[in-house]
Length: 415
Image (tube, one colour):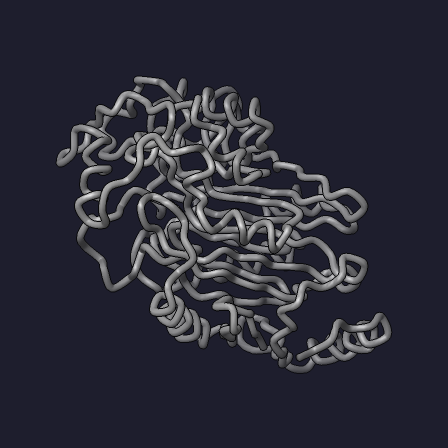
C-alpha cells in the first residue's frame, strides 16, 4: 500500500515529471509516466485537495416522479406509452411491487451511505429531467421527462450542490418549463450550469466554494450528437442551453479563454459535456481532441462526459481525468427490453481527488451501483465483476485500469 507523499517527494516527482514530459509523449501528447494505485484509505485533508462526486445521468421524471410524494400529471405523448404510470407497471412486473409514495431519500438508496463515507467537497450531477408542471410539451419530440417541482426535495436529500442542465431533456416542456426548472432548483439552494434565460446565464459556471481550499467551477455544454436540437442554443435574448456547434479547436479555444481567465489558484474546473449517442463504447477522435484542448488551453481539471446509457473508458491526460461516458445513474428503464449487453442498470459513483500541491489527480475511487426498484443500490458481486472487466477493456487504449478492492470498490490506475 502506498503511503501519502511528503512534500519533498512531491517536489522531486514534479521535477521528474516535467523532464519526462519533454522527452516521452505518446501520440496526442499523453505523458507516459507509470502510476501505481493509491491507498484506499481516506487521506488527510491537510495534504490533499478537493474531492468531487460525479455520476452519469440522473432522471427523476416520468415513472420515478410517479412514485414520489407529489407526482406530476402522468400523461405522455410517446408513441408506445401514454401514461408515466405505465413505466411503474413495467418495472413492477420485472422486479416486484414498489411502495408508493416513497420518501424523498428513497431514490438514492445505498448512494447516501457512500456519500457519507467519501465526504466529497462538491456533488455534481447531470439532471436529465425538467422540474416543472408546465404543459408546453416540445412539439415533435418523442420523449418528455419532467418531475413535479414539489418533488425537488429528492435532490436536496442527497445534498446535491450542482445540477448540470445542458442536455437533451431540459427543454422537454418548453421555455416555461426551463424557467421553472432553473427557478425551482435555485430556490432549493442547488446551483445550475449549462442553461439559463439567455446566453450569458447559460455559459456562466456554477461556483461552489470549498472553505479554506478553493472553489469548484462547473461549466456545462450540450452537443447535437447527444440529441440536443440546435434550436435549443441560448442566445443573447433567448433562453436555452450552452451549446457547442462542433468539437473543433476553434470552439474549444472560444470557451478556453473565458474559463482560464476565471480560474484562480486552488480552484477545480469541471467541464461537463453531454455528447455522443446512447450506445457504444467507441470514443470519437474529435471528443478526445476536444477534451485534451480544454485541459491544455483552459486548465480544465476534469472532463465529465455523459449521454451514454452505460459506462465508458477513462483517460488520464496530463494528470487530469477524462470520463468519456458515466452511464445512467438513475432512470425508469427497469423492465424495458433491448441493449441488455450494455448493462445500463449498472453505473459508477466517481470520486476524483486532486493533490493540493501539484494540482494533478491524486486518486480516483469508484463505487459500482445498480438501479433496481427505481433506486440506486450497491451493485451485486456479478455486476461488480462485469464493470471491472468493461472498465479494464475500455481503458486499455488509454493506459488506465481499475483495481478491485476488498470492499467491492475500484481504484483507478493510470500511466
